Image (tube, rainbow, N blue to C red; front, side, top):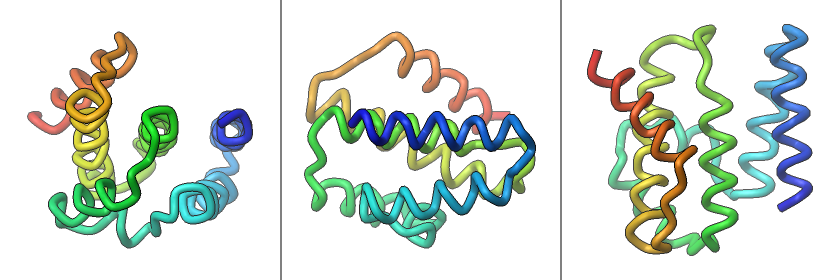
Length: 122
């Protein structure tokens, strides 16, 4: 998990430096390598398929929470709104799974859920 935190920090650093394409490439590579989720899986219209994928992967709670951090960091005003909407919807599924399956609720995740809900509802 520490390695994933370092990768996430590197992605955020690249974004802050304006190296968005490099950050995007590292994100996609890490998503596939560490979570076995392709960009296509992430950006599909089907939340049911993504939910099924998450259940099949059976990630431990810590890895699922790290995935949520990756996806939250990936939301960006530089992306088209539809792309952000698809990612936001997947994030809500992850938060729901953390609560329902792993009984994990954190103040950070609750705050992020509220922000995502506001984004999706406006």
